Image 1 (cartoon, rainbow, N blue to C red):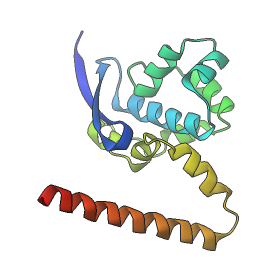
Image 2 (tube, rainbow, N blue to C red):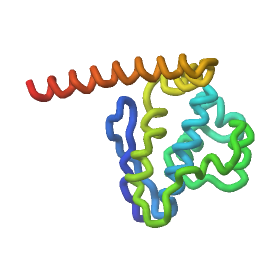
Image 3 (tube, rainbow, N blue to C red):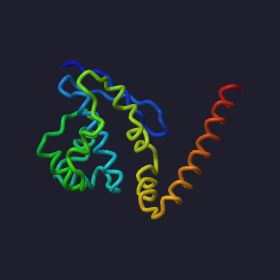
Length: 157
């Protein structure tokens, strides 16, 4: 069986490698990443969500990583449990000629791979006033720019 590497980004943007068999496609990786993002947004562990479908957490993890293709029926149930339209899992999906690299570079996937990302997203959504959201975004941008400058200085030293 042919196994091809697929680059993914783990915690703090570090590259990790996963594999998909010849049976899975870039769309499987995309859907898996979207499932993971929604699971984290709902604050569910792998074990908790897998139990809802009476499968092992390892099997559910394979769906999230795109190592196994998720069936239409199970995807429908996942969408129901995560209170998400099925179409959402396909949003931003690659065209048939896109590479897996392009999928995993998706900013949403990178974001939800970070610690506390789902918690931050939930809290940001709960901010009632638009001006407050703008302030939070400005603070994050300021901190990110300071981090970028520190990293550049570190590399130059």
